[in-house]
Amino acid sequence: MEVETFYEVMRRQGITRRSFMKFCSLTAASLGLAPGFVPKIAYAMETKPRTPVIWLHGLECTCCSESFIRSAHPLTKDVVLSMISLDYDDTLMAAAGYQAEEIIADVRKKYKGNFILAVEGNPPLNEDGMYCIQAGRPFVEVLKETAADAKAIISWGSCASWGCVQAGKPNPTRATPVHKVITDKPIIKVPGCPPIAEVMTAVITYMLTFDRIPELDRQGRPKMFYGQRIHDKCYRRANFDAGQFVEHWDDDAARKGYCLYKMGCKGPTTYNACSTVRWNDGVSFPIQSGHGCIGCSEDGFWDKGGFYNRVTGINQFGIEANADKVGGTVAAVVGAAVVAHAAASALSRARSTHDDQNREDK
Amino acid sequence: MSVKTMDETAAGTTVYVYEAPVRVWHWISALCIVVLAVTGYFIANPLPSVSGEASEHFLMGYIRFMHFSAAYIFAIGFVARIYWAMVGNKNARQLFMLPPIFSKDWWAGMLQEVRWYLFLEKEPRKYVGHNPLALLFMFVAITLGGLFMIATGFALYGEGAQGWSHALFSSWVIPLFGQSQDVHTWHHMVAWGIVWFIMLHVYAAIREDIMSPQTMVSAIISGYRSFRK
Ligand code: HEM
Ligand code: SF4
Ligand code: SF4
Image 1 (cartoon, chains in turn cyan, orange):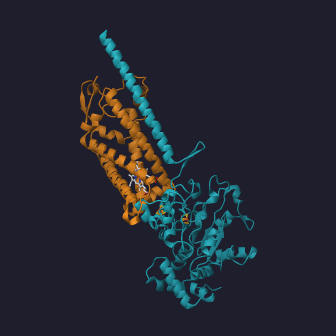
Image 2 (image 1 turned 90 degrees about the horizontal axis):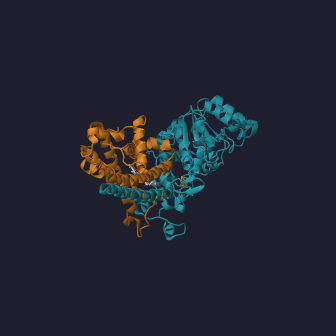
Image 3 (image 1 turned 60 degrees about the horizontal axis):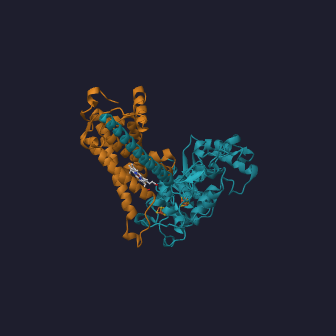
């Protein structure tokens, strides 16, 4: 089979030239690129051989796939999906059984070192990986094998990026994020539970069109979508700065749409694009519907205390207390000790001066 | 460390201990820490909401601004103080060197000091600089605690401000702790630790001033420490 370009694949899928150009400008816009990039993207897609994508699933809930197929712009979805589903995604593709497994082997051979591996979910490592068996084999084996021939890996969602719920304490299956299993390939983390559809399609489009990985931050997340916190672009930020907070879920401040900081909003500690890109075709995002951010795209968000605590509480000796209660209690104890010690000091001093005086009198 | 040549600490003598930069630093830092602790508390537990339009108010903004201004002064003072530890007298160095934990004498002094606070000792030893117990507390709370608050504080600051604090602190401190929430939690808990230290520090200084044979409060004001009977 001759290697096709992206453009040829799209045309074969029945996409018109006009739609194709629209897709190119949309891509440029969603990646924050200047209009001058549109012809560059078009040129790249017309000339570059198509890069196949293999999409594997480990321990996960499929929310990433669910999000992905709901990408707002139908065009983006169709185009990107048609590029991807051609290869391997056991949830979305039509093939099954041996026929399906053959596709992986085929792509690995034909596109060795030249395909992108997208991983949704993560491998459990306990019991030699038998907590996640696919086609009769532990997922961790399939992952390692496929990764060995891939050009780069995309870790979809918080599962692949950090571990998410199945890695929550005490993590009985030892579910392990992808970057701790595969250490010799570039890995792009796209965390979130799930990640925003437009972010997913934009990341994959960027990689396919420009044939390189987007700029990543220290923790391996694309800077263009994870460079800022929810709090930095939240439309309730003005209320935060003014000092206007919701105190109870049903108070007047809640109706007025004040800041949810006191309700434990984790926007100040969460890196994601929700407050800019929003969800479901830009309709809304959690804070806009009156609920604080729960920090779903952050490392270990299941183990950071309640979803309604902005800082992690202290859980020792069976009591649940927040840092201020503990801090205040200890401060009170220290204060009481100081007072008691001062009293004892005064007493002992009085006694010793008394003794001194007695001695002098004698 | 426990410099106590007979003539220096003999009753009736007065020794120049704290040079002017150390004293100025002490009082500026003290003020900063009070401002940081109070504004920090109100960052974590904001005041009741103000009414009216958001555009008419900037309460939380001002509280945070005070925190960050005091933070800058505290941090710059800290750096200047480290410089002075290098060029100042030997007492200026005490705070920035690992306490002499391998010295038997130092631990003996520590025991003596603990017994003094438990009323088991009639008289504490005399020290020109800090006594071992005080030094240990100050080293942990101010040298380590201060560094910790500066590192975590500027890491949090850099998240919003970007710029140099992001490059210098956020970029590595946040991954080191795991995520931003952990940095907040630790910054918050260590803040309480510093509050506990300040309470003990102020009490101990005043008490020593009254009860021990050496002056404390006036020493950090005038720089001279006197030894009485
Ligand atoms: C003795 C020194 C300090 C004390 C006692 C202190 C105290 C606090 C406290 C209690 C909080 C609230 C934490 C939370 O619940 O999220 C806080 C937040 C913060 N502090 Fe400090 N702090 C100190 C030094 C610093 C320094 C040196 C900086 C450097 C810029 C700094 C920057 C910040 C920032 C950026 C926040 C978060 C503000 C926000 O989320 O809006 N702090 N501080
Ligand atoms: S609602 Fe949350 S993200 Fe928005 S300003 Fe308030 S604390 Fe920040
Ligand atoms: S607002 Fe926060 S919790 Fe909600 S989806 Fe976005 S990052 Fe996740």
